[in-house]
Each structure stands twice: as structure tokens, then as C-alpha cells.
Amino acid sequence: MEADLRYPIGKFKKTEGVSDAQRTALIAAIAEAPAKLRAAATGLTEEQLDTPYRPGGWTVRQVVHHVPDSHMNSLVRFKLALTENEPTIKPYDEARWAELADAKGPIEPSLLLLENLHERWLVLLKSLKAADWQRTFRHPERGTMTLEETLQLYAWHGRHHVAHITSLRERNGWR
Image (tube, rainbow, N blue to C red; front, side, top):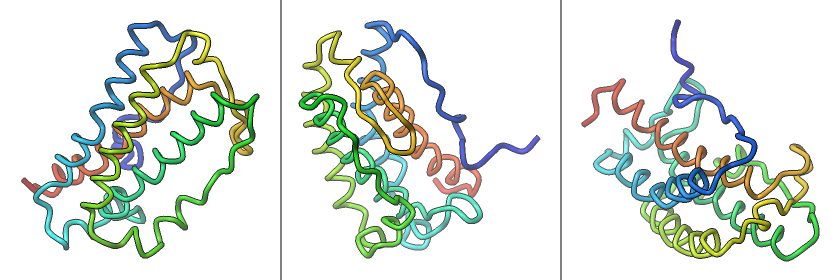
């Protein structure tokens, strides 16, 4: 059976009742994401950056730009959930964002943005109390989401997109 190139680490699976140790590991995964994304993209040529990670998929360049776009939205969602009573968030069309001019430019600004964004996000994540993880926001397409679920999703999200790049590098023998 051929691997599904869309989900090199598997599809996202939510865990109910995350323990403190699991939460710490999830926060660590978010902390590691910028360095892992940078390492995955380092040394690639312009041609390699413009190679789709799978047939019909985004290019490596678009993936690198997508991660901070997505994580920026997540940080805002965390802040809204922490300061409002179950706010309805605004989703965004990530496929259309990936076609904008800034998703086709150099990757260094997005790598730096992700590093700095995560530095801020980690301060917030590490400050949360047990009850805060059960705060919610309403996603118009996914329904009500807790911050605990959102933490899990974004820990997976970073690994998921890094694996798109590292698995492409491996398949193509790019060192």
C-alpha cells in the first residue's frame, strides 16, 4: 500500500483529557517547530523550493509560508478564547492565501516570522492555568473547539508540514 503523501505523519487525532505531561510535550512540539521547519528547508535550491511536495500539492515554498500564516491565526484564536466568551473566529482560505505574492517570495521572512511568533505564543501557552485549556472558540466550519484541542492540532500541524518537506527531500534524494 502506497503512503498517503498528504499525511506523512497520519491525520490529526484528538486526545480527550490531556495530562499535564502530555500538555508539556505538546508545548515542546510547538517550541521545536520553527527550528525543524528551518532545518527541513535549509539548503534547498530555488528550483527545489518551487517543487510540490506531492502531485497537485503546494510547493515547499508555499508550505514554508503557510505555517506562520496558520500559526498566526492560531495565536489570535487563543487570545480571543482567553479574553472573550466563546468567540466566533473568522476562518481563512488557506489555499487562496498560498497563491498570494508573499507566498511566492523568499522563505527567510516567513522562517523569521515563525521563530518570533512562536516566542510570543510560548509565553502565552506556558502561562495558562488548567481551566484555561477548556476555554473555547467557535469555528464556523469545525464547531466549538477547546484550547486543549487547538494545542494538539497545532503541535501536529507543525510536524505535519515539516514532514511534507523532509519526506520530499528523502524521496528525491535531496541532502
